[in-house]
Length: 357
Image 1: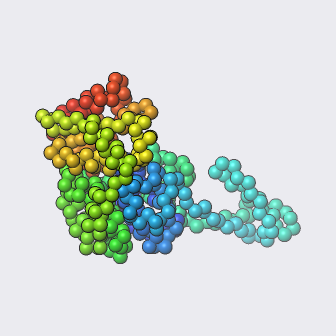
Image 2: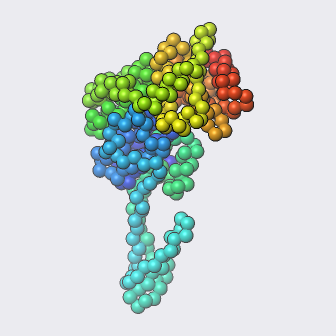
Image 3: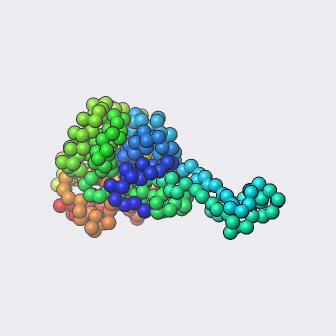
C-alpha cells in the first residue's frame, strides 16, 4: 500500500485501469481533488473512472465532469490472463467461478485433461489501481472488500498536514511535473481551494493556499469564472433551505458563535442532496465573518450530524478532547438526540466554545 504522496505520480504512470474515489467527509475538497487526478490520468491515456459516492453537488457541476463519467460504485476493468502448457496442445478451456475463486479445466487435442502441474498462468501484474482521496477507514475497507485489492493496487492519499487541503496537496504534487497541469486541472484544483478557504478569507487560509493559488493562476485557472459560478448560482432547493437555516440561527454575542439545524424531513423533501450541505455551511460561515465558529445540525434517522467550521481560533482542543477529524477548517461530530434538537445544538455550541482557544 502506498502512503507517501510523492509516489502518486509513479502510481499514475504504472497503472492502465484507474478508479479515483472521493471521500464523503469533505466533498468540496475531495471531489475537485479527485477530478483533477482523473483528468491527469485521462491525459495519460488511462482507462479512468471517478467514483463520487453521493453524486456531484449542484455547485460543482460546472467543472469538467463531462469528460469523466462519474459513478456511485467502485469499478475497474476485469484483469485478463493467459494459460499455456509446455507439453500439451490446449484445445478447450472450461471454468467455473465460486465467489472470488476461478476454477479452470483444460483439455488437449486428444481430449485429455491437462495436469495442473503442466499449466502456466500469466497475467498483467498490477495494471489496475484505485486511488482513494480523503476516504475514511470504513470507506477504504469497503474499497478493499469490493475489489479484492493487493497492496500494490491501492493508493491512499491522506493529508500530510492538518492545515493542507487535498487540492493544495495535489497542486504541490503536480507541480513536480508541470506537463500534467492543464488549464482544466488548474481550474478544478482552484475551485476546491476557493471553497475550502472561503475565497481566501477564513482561518484555513495559509501561505501554502496563496502559493498554490498563484501557481494555478499561472497555469490558466479561471478564478473569476469559479467565483462567479460558486457565489451566484444557487438552486431553488438551496435557497429554500438557506431561508430555514437563517430563521433558526442562534448567535451568542458573548461567545461569538452560532448554530442552526435542519430536520430530517426538510432534507428529504427539500430536493437537496446531503453532499450539498457543506455549501450551506460555507454560506453560513461567509454570512457570519466575526464568529469564532458556526455549526449546522442535520437530523438523520438515529442521530444528529453536526457539521461545523472554525473561523477564528485553534481547533487543536477539538481534535484532542472530542476526537474530531478536521478537513481544513471544517469538522463533523455525531450527537445522540436525548431531548430536543435545539437543546443538543445549544449544549454542543457551549462545549465547543469552551474548547476553542
